[in-house]
Amino acid sequence: MKVQNKWIRAAIPALLLHCSIGTVYCWSIFSQEIADYIGFSKGATEWAFSFAIFFLGMSAAFLGNVVEKDIHRSSLIAAICFAGGMAGTGFFIWYGGNNPGSVLALIGIYICYGFIMGVGLGTGYLSPVKTLMLWFSDRKGLATGLAVAGFGAAKAIASPIMQTLLDSLGDGGIYKMFFILACVYFVMMFIGHLLLAKPEGWHEPTGADKGPGAIDVIKTKPVVFVGIWLMFYLNITCGLALISQEKMIIKCIGLGAMAGVLSSITAVFNAGGRLGFSAWADKMKDRNTVYKIMFIMSIVVTGLAIITQAIAKQGDNVISGMPTSALLTVIVLVLLFAVNAGYGGGFSNVPTLLSDHYGMGNISAIHGITLSAWAIAGLTGNQVATFIVNKVGEWSTILVDGHEYEINPTGYQAVLYLTIVLYVISLLASLFLVTSTSKKKA
Image (cartoon, rainbow, N blue to C red; front, side, top):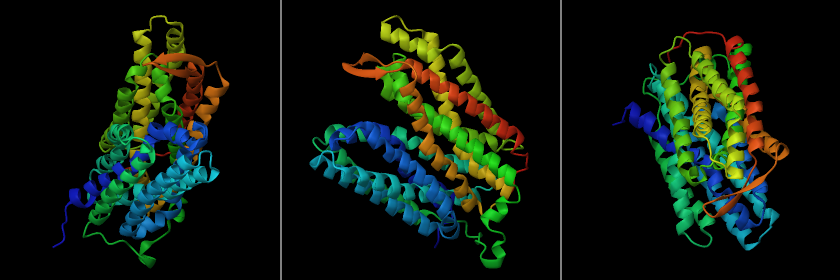
């Protein structure tokens, strides 16, 4: 007898899939260890993460129709590619450790972590979304928020586990960790793949019954799609620009000893924003209202940090050995928490906002095309922030728990000038390009 339960057939498999692939955001935990082990600079290895996000978005854009037709095939592709890419990354790290400075090792990591895992990320991210909205037709935002929150929470859950593995596996722990996690995540994702199913009463339209394709549907409201794509892209770019510098900003304001704890807290805000904002949007007449709230919130907290020069002043205090300001510390932490929450909320509300405008017929394909914004943001967000930090201000050395770190308070502060402009553009897109609409049923 078939089990027909929305939690077993949709929510649990979605969490198994998203909690696995969401660990891609743990890259900062081990990127330096990989660079040291294979004999390359951290900057060279950072491209692996950028490629992973790029191919996540692009595979979602081009494989959206595969997901639309068969979620079992797409979820299996996700499990094989994500776990296989992770195991391949471990192999090339091992090879690079035995052949320091090997370009083959670096390219292998790019291909495995960037391309192969990226395909698993894109198909795995899309596979449960439509299924959730079909099962939870009255609370689409809550449902998708729950799954996407798993993607955001994965970093908070997996980071301490990964750190423990790195500390306990001894010499070569970095590649051993990848082999272990590849097995664990394959099992999780394969179970999710087996459980995932659309409601028994839902029959996916085929042939002439399916109606217009995704592109044709988008063409019915092209300006709206441009607006959604643009505000999605800009929100991710702003989020990545700040989140990529988050660890050093925390050290910069004198909280280096708490960096690990605070990174976990920001990850909780990221996950909470995904669930909270999407559940809240279910209660709104127009789901786009939640984007206006998120962008205004981000503009206010970023503007406050700019007016007070919170990061720059606090960093100067830390460098000079002067007492730090509790008020400035609070302002920077509120900035990090709010941006993480808005960043997460931007993800969880996209599929439901698209379904309100374009219906459920081609939602996986339309959502996949929209995720191309994530692909481009993955190549621009953290890279632009790194460029600004390297070009503006001066580097200084601080001591945290016996370790020396290079920080650039003025550079981190300068990133905020870029993000506030982009947040304002995002708000304008939300106000003038994305028209109001009533929610559509499945």
